[in-house]
Length: 516
Ligand code: NAP
Image 1 (tube, rainbow, N blue to C red):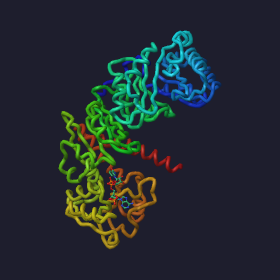
Image 2: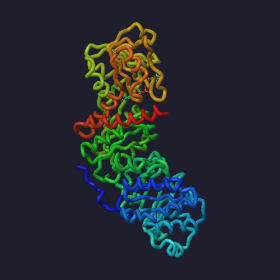
Image 3: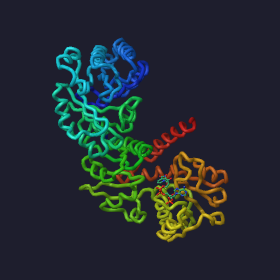
Image 4: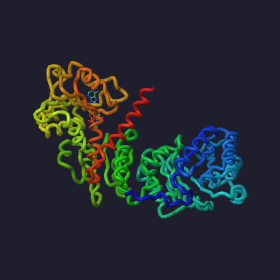
């Protein structure tokens, strides 16, 4: 059972995930605030996003009139960050302070004041103007991590604020961990690593001791932010604790991956204290060094690291070693890494229920990672494998590795296969009109396209039109994911839940693409 941490009250607000409300006009700002309060009772009001002083006054007037903060017991933080400090407010410091004072009267209990403004103000002035509120003294570094975080920490503390916040752009997990260390063992520190490379650390910030973490309702206000509904429902960032088992996907790019959605749905369905995060990894060594401090228990590996990871493993499943690609790693005692290939299982689970593989003749188009997984899987299942790829040498090498044979493209129209597998990216979104084969090549009973974006590729459409059975790469995707879940957890994967989660995301994407 997932231990609930939501009962733990933060030093700033009851809810430790703070919804960021940022819009350019008072009306949209109000709409976002209502949305934020559906998910969290803590919200930051980015007054500096409102286009002018009139819109700020309008919004604060509405806030005051409705008394929404008191009625809902919400903690509202007012921010009116000036341009020089990375915000959008163009007015003077005097006006900034007046807006913050107005916000406190309208129901905000906290105000965020950046170090740049604090330096310019006498403490007595702040006390007179803003004394009724609590101060969050903040420092932002949008370009890079400052050399000496301790100096920043000290300066913020000297301000006499009730809590301090440090947000810094980080290019590596190592840098992000440095920022999070500021919050460890302290109750009144907000630590925010910014940037796409440290997005997982943002999601783990509360677990690491940050007093709150921010998630925008609609508009991202910094790099590497995840929207509030996803932070709450997909990643459950407010419930993660030191006992949470951390998994993830390592790749570049990873933003488009459906795996976080699918694996987190599985953990939730099995009521496990575990989370699966997207790690955008350029430098594999940076990720490997972060495994221990983050406490990562296992991870998926995707393009471009599936081959490179092999040289960092302590052990490898012999089949994955033969395939030459690892897409699943288990972190064992002492941080030892053990690799598997579940694409192989994905191919078998996609095909086995549909055709008898023993003694069948299967053509694989392509000779890369997916093709290798398919070739080994099908050979082990008793099929005779033919490989056709645009580079004859690689086709021949793969054919040799599985005791099959390579076949040139020009001969395909005269051959018949029980099944054809497309293991090239030809036909993948956005080039959905492309196909690796034309009609004259489709001499087979079944066609399996490993591509799952779109689910129905041009190749599959052509096959279906000729009455050939088709299998989408979606089947392989779900199957390789359920196999990963089972390897990591030792429990049976909730396959239906995982399929549904991935399917509804793909359908949403397809609807958007059709509208465009
Ligand atoms: P890969 O290692 O880069 O291999 C791609 C293969 O396709 C290579 O043989 C490459 O030939 C060939 N190729 C690329 N562009 C081509 C073109 N325009 N015309 C002809 N051949 C071309 O990639 P991979 O990891 O094997 O992935 C291949 C496909 O499998 C992708 O579409 C991926 O989405 C899919 N996949 C699906 C799943 C799933 O779960 N459904 C899992 C893994 C992969 P060269 O070597 O000459 O470049």
